[in-house]
Image 1 (cartoon, one colour):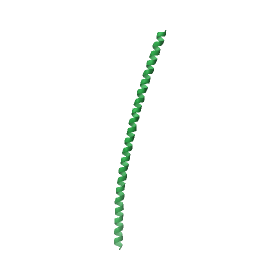
Image 2 (cartoon, one colour):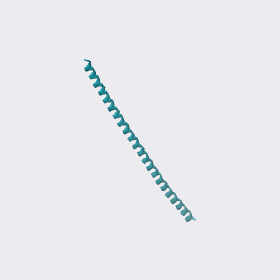
Image 3 (cartoon, helix red, strand yellow):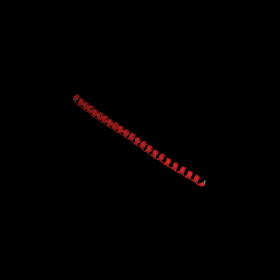
Image 4 (tube, one colour):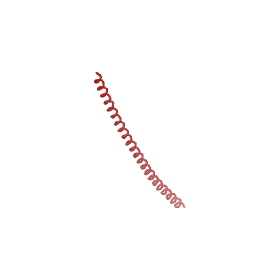
Length: 82
């Protein structure tokens, strides 16, 4: 009777340990997939940010160029008036 009880207890312990290892493997795979998705999202956001910065720099350059042209025109007008 004692051997049957111990054998049953051993089988139960082994089955629980194998199931819990499999669950741990699935959880680690899920965590890896979530981390991969998060990295993809971060990369996309950084790319968008880079594009926004590039667009802002182009707009600033255009504004500076326009301001320089306006200043040049104002100087020419002032010289012509004199």
